[in-house]
Image 1 (cartoon, one colour):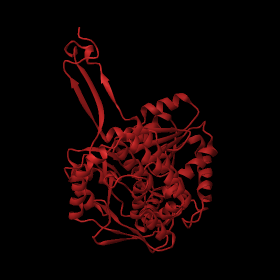
Image 2 (cartoon, rainbow, N blue to C red; image 1 turned 135 degrees about the horizontal axis):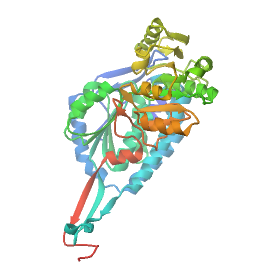
Image 3 (cartoon, one colour; image 1 turned 120 degrees about the horizontal axis):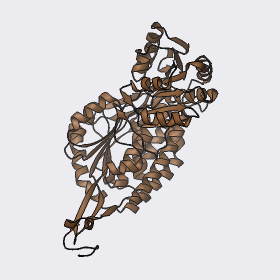
Image 4 (tube, one colour; image 1 turned 60 degrees about the vertical axis):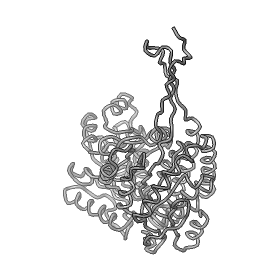
Length: 492
């Protein structure tokens, strides 16, 4: 199936993105066509699941859970390592599919696929580390003469709901960690990237995973809601907007949830920073994937003594980015996911300018392509400051006192990740303590992630942490064995 998906995309034909249901590729639902945001033509087709398909998937997953759970961790690890190698071998083809379905520059797509390979390799390593504990029960009088042990058992049936902006790597985190933990997984693909999602699922199966390990359904919110509500689902991992995350939680009820939601990421540039480097990094990470990342640079706070200098340098860096065909290896900025998203970004920039800000570059769009936009000096209540832009727009604001800028960063209802450019260790530790975020990147922007490092947020940015080690914990349950009258500790 992997060859079929990638061959169609490489030939210029629309890729078929079949469902994978109860061990069989296909699907009988209505056809949803994905229009490429750059090409303007159909690039993939998927079959939308109905209620019957949802019920079949859940029932099959429930019946398959024991089969996957009984696989030895070493066996699961070997399959994940095969998947990592296969990803590296097919990275160019899948990156091309990302460019077609999402308008993501192929250079960004190649980087995402490199991360997929790394993520799957780390998941393999974590599968080998799954174990348990011998508990010190004999340390208390009532425990004398007994032995207690624990191990981490698979949760059973996992549901992975992925977004469009990094569909390959975010699925690798969810599906890879779930399989490492010994679960069967139902994947609900984003409607904007059905073929990329099908390719990643097919890749795991080609690497040796049994049919019982994974299923794939296509569709919109109604399919996701039906899956979330199914009582057979043991754990749900969702990445997406805060509003949709709240809907997932309502539909799920009393289930284990890992929610990685929205962001409004701030980066602080102090007066002692390497200004040229800060401007370069913020430009490269503010407009990659057209700013469609929950940790993309959105607000840059610069000390007022260097504000004008930074705005000039940052504007020059943004203006130098190459905008164009996402399949061109030289392209830095491709399209946004669709024209509606592009129009929203441009309208927010115009509203900020009407409120007194200055658009130093950009502020225009061509179809779904937004020119890299810098908004200097917006009001604190402007949408580009208070809301999640999720687009090719970065705001730059001045500050005078370090405590005040930390407070300004914390006014957001989101708290995913922040960046800080400084050489002052005191400021670094203060920011780490005071900023209401899940992660702080020092001498880098907010938009930096290592896939084996804990990642997640606070406030409306969700809860739980995404990295293979932490996700294996989320995808497993602790089971205790208590041996009464049997003790390795002694009887007295």
